[in-house]
Length: 464
Image (cartoon, rainbow, N blue to C red; front, side, top):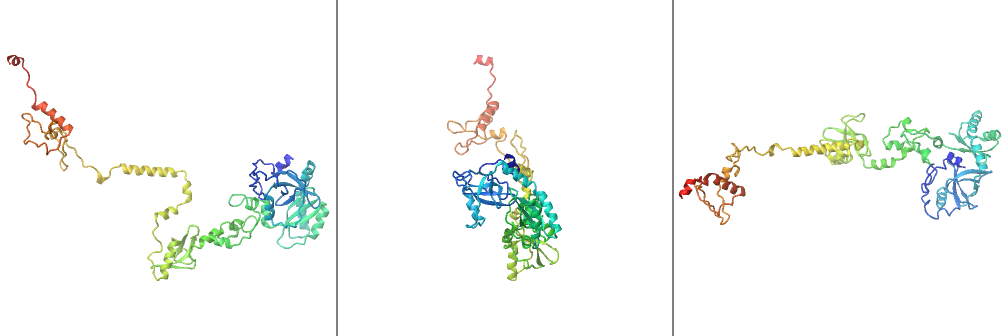
């Protein structure tokens, strides 16, 4: 039992709510973790080989979960399948499958026993040889058909032959020969080229597994108009897939292109300027830009403008006006918008921004030529500035000494020592109070020069 589950992919480890998304026919069970969902076991979805599944009634009240292998009713005999959905979602899927209310619903017999699994494995081992022999028989009968796959029923009493044919085929004689050769009941089912490609599988030009082999169950017709709307070259070798039909992915984005194309002017409209007449050449539909040329047949004097600018020139032409130039100056916003998107994923994009910030800081720190301070190499001894420079006050000690200091007691200038008397007395109420450094320097100079005490003579002291 466990070996069979691993071979068929039904024994994969997964959580209860993931829905076992290992096949395109599986339905995501978003009610798996809700209590009471597993109690409703009236209808069960069972999946068989390839793209075949059915809905069966659990008349015996078996406790079934996803991944269980069951034996179900078939005509004739029984078939072996895997339970893929239970609970409340099964009636919704039956309604989606458009099953008629009066349709006959078969029942589930039992969970598969080891004997049932042995018969099923034996029947599956004969499928490949049966397909090869049936192809040779159809070729010998001269039938224009290709048998793509063979599926045996679980008990080995019935075989389903899937074939591909471009025209109607009368295979009544083929059924008789196949029934006599393989001693089983024969059923023929016609499939299309897309279904065959989905059964075989493969890798598409996008580098991923084919959509028809992974998730697509319904195939919509694809026309060449989808390629025209997207401005794709009508090259059959590039537009065709592995099924030799147009690729299904052409329909994925065609609605977005049709919507964006409504915002562009018509291809037949020409734009006139004072110098030339411009014709439509090509357009980037998603970006909203149009390229015009001065010649209809080839690209000459190309000009790429936005759709807004094209409508502006068109309205000017309707009023009888003609602009000087067709293009307009691009704004910084437009230049940033047209930047390559892959540049945002560059590994050095942060280094570029950091270097730009560093350059900006250095430019701010460097002194500007017009804002440099005037060179002042004044002499500290005399407080004078060089030629051409502005004289600055209180730079030297002599300049500071020339200012009369104030008295701390009565705000009056003290008497100067003999020899250092200023030329005029300063009014204490009119002149500002000198700074602390000025007062300190004044006292120091007076003590050193004018107020030096005479040397004491011992003889004079004695005489006094």
